Length: 282
Image (cartoon, rainbow, N blue to C red; front, side):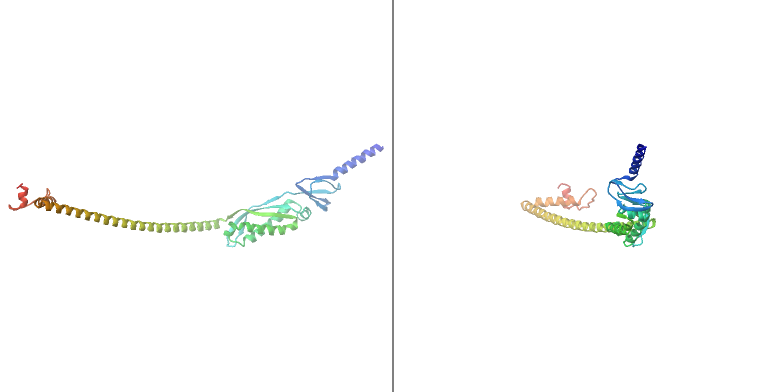
């Protein structure tokens, strides 16, 4: 009889120990709940723990989680409608507060979504589109992260950061922006063409100037050479004339006739013409 009672006690002790013991993984944190009411402090360190058998263990994710939703419309300061696709990284900071406020991950997401959207809408609404798409976006998102973090801490949720994946213009705004960009590019192109034409005119003017100078210098040089040649010829002619005036006169006469008379020339000469006698060989 005693052995039976001993077995019963051992079985009961083993069951009690089995129902009481639990382990917490490195990626988990937990709280102990008794009839829906949290008991004790949150358990954040990994290890082996014990609880009363009728108490329930509620574990939560300790790792960083991600919040991601469908793109939503936001109006910028310059009245541009943006379709913003954002995401956030967050974690459960205080399991006890988290359990009392939202209880589950889905409950947390239902809290996170309106808060982050509200902060995004307020902060992006203070800036023009050009400021949102340039390097200022980093500072804007830091402000959104800080304000969202402050508001969600009361739910045991810590927002690590909020980021924008994409920020697309609506169809109407997109067309207007593209038209403005196209007009700006065309204005730049006209400016570059105008500057190019101006530079081309300068180059052509400079080239014409250099061409005129070169031609003038060449003409001057040719006239100088021609003058020197004529002077040399006159000198030669003078020497020839001095050595044999009649022969010189004869040669000059032939040259004159050669320039005047060709195959189409008709001459009417008197019988005592020197040219007639010359042509007859007299």
